[in-house]
Amino acid sequence: MSIKKIITVPNEILRKKSVTVEKIGKNEKVLIKNLFDTMYNSKGIGLAAVQIGIPKRIVVIDISKENENKSPLCLINPIIRQSSKETSVYEEGCLSIPDTFLDIERPKIINIEYINIDGKKKEIQCDGLLSTCIQHEIQHCDGKLIIDFLSKLKKDILIKKLKKKSTSKITV
Ligand code: NI
Image 1 (cartoon, rainbow, N blue to C red):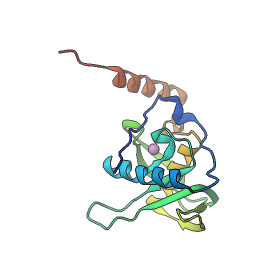
Image 2: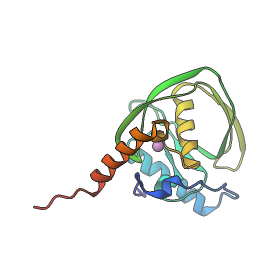
Image 3: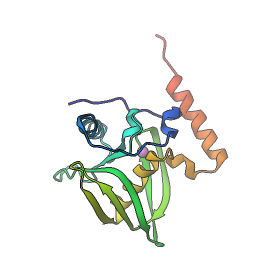
Image 4: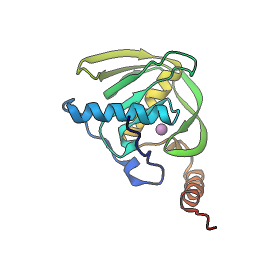
């Protein structure tokens, strides 16, 4: 079990475009295990490798509820092939942006292609929460965050607030 530190805004690493994974070797397998451990430990439903400081196109997801069996999903080099015109709105949070929840409108249904942990090419169609979660994680791989959906003014105010929070220390 290896829980890694999750990087938070405004760390510039989060703005890096992650690189395509060419080969799934030992390092990648350890990384995937660490991503799952870190995500479950933080009670998140998705985590991208860049969020623990490794800008490779790998994301892990598990949208199962606490009282349900786990359903871990690992996507390597995920690409959206099709998105529906119909949209849905979820209130989204992000492990890299503490205490912030925003209503985000995204395509409701997407078709994606990805490589699984065994190196096999897969294609799936996703709807609902899974679709939203995958889109959120793919945006991490491209250096985009949910705060980018806000106007520049709102975004600046929020980042300022978060900066203050991450640097405030108590002296006793
Ligand atoms: Ni996130």
